[in-house]
Length: 202
Image (cartoon, rainbow, N blue to C red):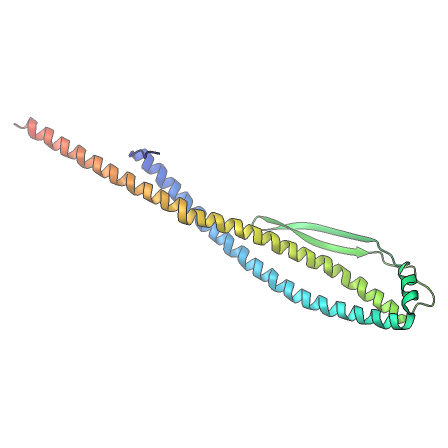
C-alpha cells in the first residue's frame, strides 16, 4: 500500500504512534502487575499445599486409629450414615481487568447419623476430614485464579510484543518516509521557485 506524503498523513501517523507508545507502556505495566500477582498466588498455593498435606496426614492417622479399633466392617457400616450435604457460596473480583472467583464460604452438613458405640477416635477422624475438605475447594479456587492470570499474562505479552516489534517500528518507519518525502518535495518546490524568480529577473 502506497504512503501518502502529506502533512495530514504525517499528523495521523504521529497520532497513531503516540497512542501505540502509550498503549505499549500501559500494557507493560499491566503485564508486570499480573506477573507479580501470579507469583504471589503461586507462593501462597505452595504454602497452602504444605499445610493441607499436614492436615490430611493427621486426618489419615486418626482414620487408621479408628479403623484399628472399629474394624473394617464397622467402618463401612458407620460410613453409610455420614452426611454428604455441601454448599459453596462465592463471589468474584478483578485483578487488572481479569475476573477471578472468590470462595466466600464452604458449608458441609453439620451432623452425621452415627451409632452409640462409635469411638472417640472415629469421631476425631470424621471431624478432621470434614475440616480439611473445604481446604480442597479453596485450593481449587487458588489454582483457577492462577490459571486465569497465566492466560491473561500470555495474551498481554503477545500484545506488548506486537506493539513493540511490529506496530511501533512500522509507524516509525512510515513517519520517517513521509518526513523524508515532504523534505524532498519542499526542496523541489524551493528549487522551482528559485528557478522561476531567476527567470523573472532576466
